[in-house]
Length: 405
Ligand SMILES: C[S@@+](CC[C@H](N)C(=O)[O-])C[C@H]1O[C@@H](n2cnc3c(N)ncnc32)[C@H](O)[C@@H]1O
Image (cartoon, helix red, strand yellow):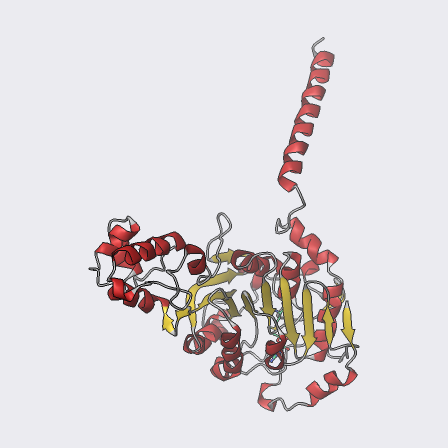
C-alpha cells in the first residue's frame, strides 16, 4: 500500500473557490475530517483526494467510466441547484474523458432523468454515442407513503437512470459507419455484392452499409469476410481495402473487434433494474457499517458491479471520477479490474479511503448476491450435491429399515 502524506491538500481544496450558489445541503455528517494522505493505492485500486480534472492525465486508459457526479439537486458541495447548470458542470469532464477514451471505452452515466437529458447533448458533442437508458426502480418502499401528491402535483419519483454510452470509433478520423461505406465504394463493386461477400441474403447492404439509423456494426467475422472479398474482387489499384493498419494489409476480425466495446448481458437482466434503495447494513456509516449514514448518494454495489462486469474484463481499467465513498472502485477491485478514483471533498475522501481499506463486509455482500465466485465454484457445487444426495439416500435407507422392518 502506498500512502503519500500531503496534509495541506485538504485545506487547499477547501479554500478553492466554490460558487456559493452551488453549496450543497446533502452532507449527513457535519463535522469535517482531514485525511492523513491524499493518495491511497494497492495492487488494483488507486484513489486520490482532488479534483478529477487534475487527475485524469495520471490515470491509465479506461475501459469503463462510472460517472455519478452532479444531479442538480445541491446533493453535495459543488452540485448545482437545478439541471440547467449541469451541462456546464459536466462539460470539462466529458471533454477529458473523450481525450482518454478508446473505441472500447464504455461510459455509465448515473443521474436523474432530467439531469441526464440536460447533459446528453454534451456527451454527444464530445463523441459519446447513446446505447441504452437503464432505469433503477427503487420501488414503492422508497417513498413509503410519505409523499403528498396533492402538494407536489406529480407522480412520486422512485427511479434513477444509469445510461450506457460508447465512445464513437473512427478510422483515420472517419466514423465507422461512413468508413465502411466509403471503403466498399472504393472497391468499384456494386452494393449488392456485399451480401455475397458476407454470405447473407441482404443484411450487409441493409445494415452494415446503411448510412442511416438502421446501421448495424458488422460482427468481426463479417467484417473480415467483407475485407477478403473486397481485396479479391475489388479494383486492383485501390488495394488494400478495409485496412486497419494504415494501408499495409486488409483488416482482420481481431483488429475490428478492438474497435468495439465489450458487452455481455447476464441471463434475464433487462433495462429495468428492480432494486430497493440502499438501506441498513449496505449503507456505509461513520463507524464502518454502524453509526450515521455518510453519503446520501452512495450507489448499490451490486448494480455498479453489474455494469462493470458487463463491459470490461479482468485486468481492465475502471474510472470513478466522482468517488464519494468509492463504490465503483470497490466493485471494480472485487471483480479483478484496476480502478482509479478521485474525490474532491476531504471528508468524503476520508471516509472513502477508510471504506476501501475495510473492504471485507462489502466483499461478503457481493458474494451473497452472487457477484463473486469462489474458485472451482461449479465443481464444488456439483460435489456438494452428490455428497448431500448420497447422504440422503443413506438416511432414507436407514429410516426405511427402521419404520418398515
Ligand atoms: C453523487 S456523489 C458519488 C457517490 C458515489 N457514487 C458512491 O457510491 O459513494 C458525487 C461525488 O463527487 C464528488 N465530486 C464532485 N465534483 C468532483 C470533482 N471535480 N472531482 C472529484 N470529485 C468530485 C462530490 O464531492 C461527491 O462526493
